Length: 173
Image 1 (cartoon, rainbow, N blue to C red):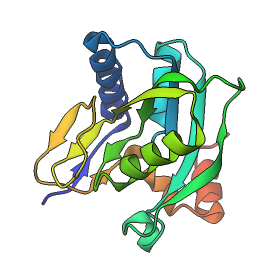
Image 2: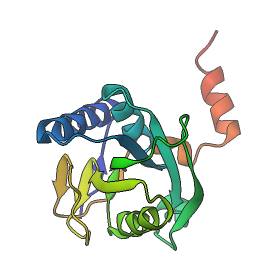
Image 3: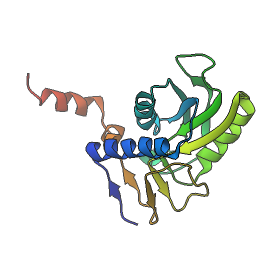
């Protein structure tokens, strides 16, 4: 199992491919719901590309060891959206990757209980790992060897304010 390192350019290209895969399927959806934090950037880009408002549900399971160990899944109590009542009908559920599949499984169950206006949920991710018990409806890369993915924004996971100040002051004026 090798690590997969992704640059900002590659990351954006992959999200564009994900948007294309959803578009190319011909499936028409009514709303986009992303899972924060990993799904925020893909959700935001898909929201812009498909010209739809973005709804956000906070979830968290990778809190231990600087985000490298999966623990108990927490699902936020509320869904954030700029437009009340937009989460209905066919919903595209977006995250960055599907690892165990537990998050998608539990969030889908949660939505069926808490948002009865949703009639169908399809899932979209950049990376689908073979260890997942859930196959996403839309994905870009299937990763048979289940590598740890180093996404470009992860440098901020360990950045302290002191490191940020040094970095920014190093830019000069």
